[in-house]
Image (cartoon, rainbow, N blue to C red; front, side, top):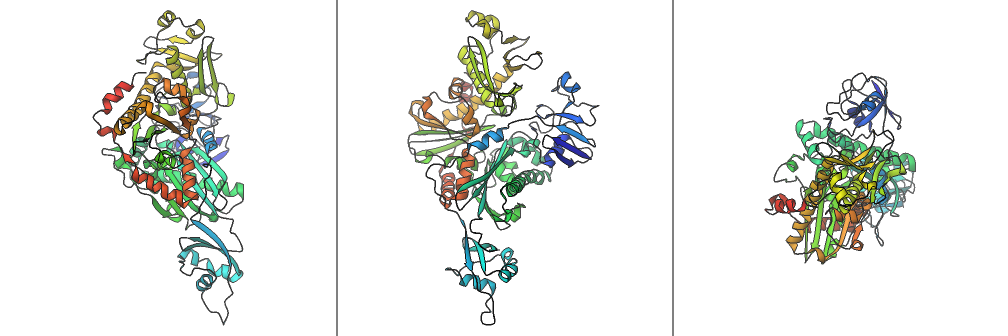
Amino acid sequence: MKITFLPQNITWEANTGETILQAAVKAGVNIDGNCAGSGTCGKCKVKVLEGDVSQCDDHHHKLTEDEIEAGYRLACCHQVTDGMVIEMPESETTASRKKKLIRLPEGFVPRAAVTKQCIEVPAASLRNQNSDEARIKGALPAEDLYFPLETLLKLPDITKNSEEITITLRDGEVIDVESGNTERENYGVAVDIGTTTVVIMLWNVVSGEMIDIFAATNPQGAYGADVISRITYVMEQEENLDTIQKTIIDCINKAVSAFAEREGIKTSNIYQMTVVGNTTMSHIFLGVNPAQLALAPFTPVFTAAVDTAAKDLNLTICPEAQVHVSANIAGHVGSDITAGIITTDLMECDKGHLFIDIGTNGEIVLTGNGRAVACSTAAGPAFEGSSIKQGMRAARGAIERVDILDSGVEIATIGDAQPIGICGSGIIDAVGEMIRVGIVDKSGRLLSREKLVKKGLSENILRHVKEGEKANDFVLYFSEDGKSDVVITQKDVREVQLAKAAISAGITIMMKEIGVKEDQLAKISIAGAFGNYIRNTSAIHIGLLPKIEEEKIHSLGNSAGIGASMILLSCDSKEEAEKVAREIEHIELAARSDFQDQYMMAMMF
């Protein structure tokens, strides 16, 4: 049965009994599936324009009566019917913001592992009966070359039709051969597999120029918002590992096809791929069972870098292309952190230098006093918007900035659109402002209107406090009909408390471990799109970041994507990444007797 997704205008042949979400994953359409199909998060809301809407499976009451009447359904619960047309929410996604943050460090010099050389090969004759392979070797300075079967199969047609040919070399191996001069057709792909977002970059490895970029929500999100839920999915049935691996391979192949069409290149001229991601993403990408990462002692199957051929992973680039999965540091500190570190001077800094990548998991690296240590802490999905009542990913209409003034509440949304929810940077901003003004006390309680009156807050602020029977809400945006207000709830504040406490406790323990005090921190580097969009003062107000001068806090942009590109383009960066992964000491917070105490202390604002 056919289902069409708008505005992409993608039509897909779905199977009977499939949900809209399951069909969307197979069709390559990204729908948030944070709760892995249980219907508890409400983030997979879509509008059914055509098709059966007589039933509405919404056991957790995530849809309003007006939404149900208008044809909205939860994609993870609603089954496909023939001829169904689905309208997806229009959005400028986290992906589109993240892809703007790729910039190679100043002074970076490419040194590609794959080179191409155009040579003239004399035609075979009765006087020169040397093999094609031997004649090619004779035309080059180096004779010690290896021809894999894939290349040998191409040689007869190439040498028969052309004396000028281009060979592609990697470490003495001839991985491709073409007619004519194609020396500049030498491409590579860098892939950053984030839990939430996948960013894929096409580079010309000769010029070191980025040719194109593709970014999308990670389609594995249909199987769970975080790594633990995806590992749980893998553990449920034997075939599930293949299923979830295929979703990411298909996503990369989709990007490669788009590059070829837009840029007019051959996919066979892509000779390298570098992949980074957290340790779970690295395992799943290679088809390695990640189950051990969900259970103590959280031991990964591998941490060292892995090299394999593209053909072994069904990637639609040159079959002999080397796919390099960069080295992980530990079970929950992955190669995305390794890649991010090489974009900084972190390993050269003997003063206190803190590196943070904030997401569902918060990865933290600290150097100082001659040591480099790393840890991972489960921040939860609050900063991704998943556990927040009206939280959402960074999309059109998401509140991303909040200012609470005597004159009232001022907000900014992505795309300057009508507010429909709040994303991670907006959540931090909102809670930070509520703490600064005194709407939320140090224990995290959202105070009543009566108590706020006594504190002298203006009526313009007080009108935003919505008092409930058990807890209060703070209204960030009043809709015209009163039915689509965007609010921060008491539970939302608690979710932020839990997330920031986990990261803050991790930072405190790391500083304690290597003997660096807060006033000795020379720099804080924040990785990812999240770090680029949060307001540092708000992050300090909620206790997410140590209290240091703002000029010492630096946003790195998409450091994982930048680092992956550096590893792709430079043998030196590749060696540096492997060295970094070996040298950093991993601290397992779960094994620390002081973690719970630090965590409880960090709960206070």
